[in-house]
Length: 333
Image 1 (cartoon, rainbow, N blue to C red):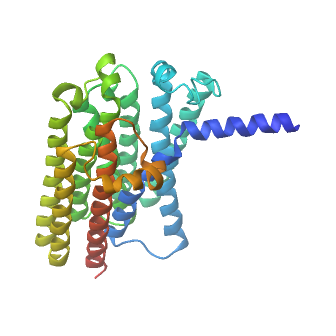
Image 2 (image 1 turned 180 degrees about the vertical axis):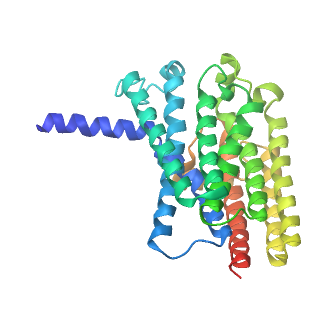
Image 3 (image 1 turned 60 degrees about the vertical axis):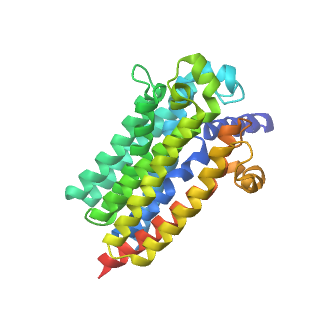
């Protein structure tokens, strides 16, 4: 292979990987890890470690990668205007190559899900396979016509919550044990948390959504009311989480959740009063720290959401990992 041919090949591979958007793969990992922890059923064997690796590959590069790739495929005309440097509109990948990209990833994910389902066997195997396949279907209809769920926030937000927040917990639990009722509750909490975050993430494209007919909540009710709706959902999630922790006998965790809620409320009030300057002490983290992972924005409301997301995600992740660990220890006995 000549140097020029090798360079072209490497550029093509990089473009295909970019189409799968590796940064987004991380979003499902916490729920998968917490679901495994809460099952209390994983054994320190090579078989279980390989199953765990397959789980992360299936929901990360394959599942989430598929949803990102097919989204770019069906958003080509929009990306030509808004993101011309993306792999397809920039010409680094043809439409045919893009179709092969998400097609191969889709088939690989389906085969892997079926294989693991048979390996687990029984009801657990069915739950695992159906969960992953459901996530792939949601990923397709989210971006592809005629349904294109992303066009309406009342369809898109629940779709994201289901595929990123609930199905991941269910699959991770089913991989190693019978479904724990506490895990179902954690999945429900993550469903509503994901809904609230996707609602605010639409701040970045409010102007474009309004022009293209996308029905985001911000377009319909305005920025300030959208903040209120999203913050209300988040506070409800923390409140229910605290009640569940108390009900499960995790009283110390309940107090930690209450303290987390109080700090979150402080940030919420600051941002609601002034999205431009509220919680400005977190701006450095957005610009120079987490910015590469969660994105950056020139839109004041979306930039405020990014600042809030750093605090909110950290608090929620810490609390759910503690809960998952305590649940897993309970079932170890």
